[in-house]
Length: 170
Image (cartoon, rainbow, N blue to C red):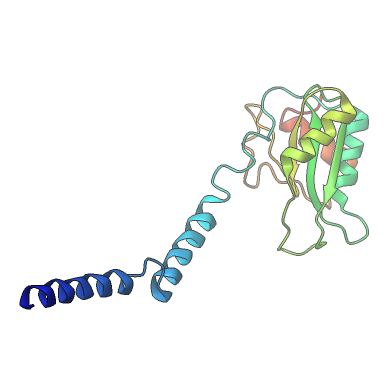
């Protein structure tokens, strides 16, 4: 009898310990999802879009420069979003930010923008500019900073001159 109570008591202790240990108790659940959220937050844009940005030599035609000027201007309260161009410079298209001139401008799927451009152009397309910064890396353009930024105040001739300085226009 004594032995039976011993095993029953030990069984009850083990059972209680198993059921009291909850992997996703309320506190652990909050910690788990907080950690998961932080991981996604920090990892989301670490390499996003780098493979979608163009590299190498690119010379723009007059027509494409005029189209780029239109994009930079951002008429009717529309802020430039993404300017995508064929790698041979034969075709280009662009998207505007949905929020207008807000600082909260978020881009859509840039790989999808490249695919849409490729369907229309028949050749590979890459990102030339995000907002008013030329991202295309050609050895002269750093792809960031003041050097790569184009002001909306520039007229067509000033943009041509700026593109010439960056190696995109002859």
